[in-house]
Length: 260
Ligand code: ADP
Image (cartoon, rainbow, N blue to C red; front, top):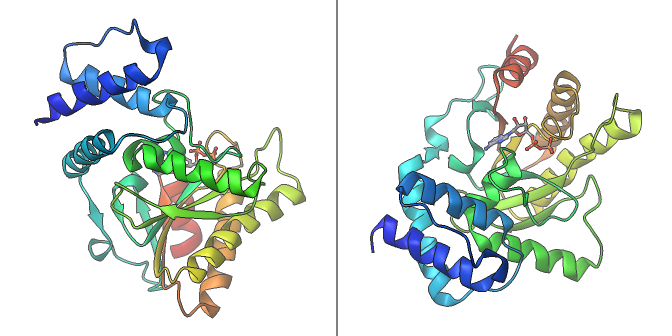
């Protein structure tokens, strides 16, 4: 089965399981079909999927992984000042590390806005539908939505990393309060504590809350760096932390704070 056939199959199955998609017109062009598939993955409710669906989805996502490229940890260099700390600009879904962190929302179900450009959307898209199902089961078991500042771990399914650690950052309306700052630090701490509990050595963390959740980037970076440094100096498990920036603002801020 080539990529086109896999996409066509997956779109067909997603249409079948949702009556609202019955009249959806599938474009001919491969690029457009691929975008439509991502949008359908994004909006799919948590539910089980057939073994055949999962097999073909996994094959498709493995092909995508090859096309998009994997970034291995041994190709990155730590900062000169600290051999446990890295700054890396790029898409976290390409990183092959023990765990990547997701800046999730309180449902923990992933971003359901089709093709949205947040990290949560990217992680759920390239992990596969199993990730939403896993998160759903965690929330069902917990019995309430995920509070800000906690952390949960799941497998990473089709991502190059082994695990995803999900945390919900504080959402800022105007300026962050002391409580917001403490909650952001708590996110990093909960993530690292859970990583340690799961014997994770290398972990990549995006700039939590600095996108849609509007936390000022400079302050967020200061909190992130302080919390991570304090934690790893006493940790025998977590050995490498990658500050994963995605835009030039955060890249300069982290470089300035960590290497100057
Ligand atoms: P939040 O709602 O916590 O603010 P966002 O995803 O909107 O989460 O943004 C958090 C950070 O993740 C932002 O700095 C954003 O630029 C960055 N980001 C978005 N997509 C990716 C990605 N694919 N890989 C790494 N970081 C990303």
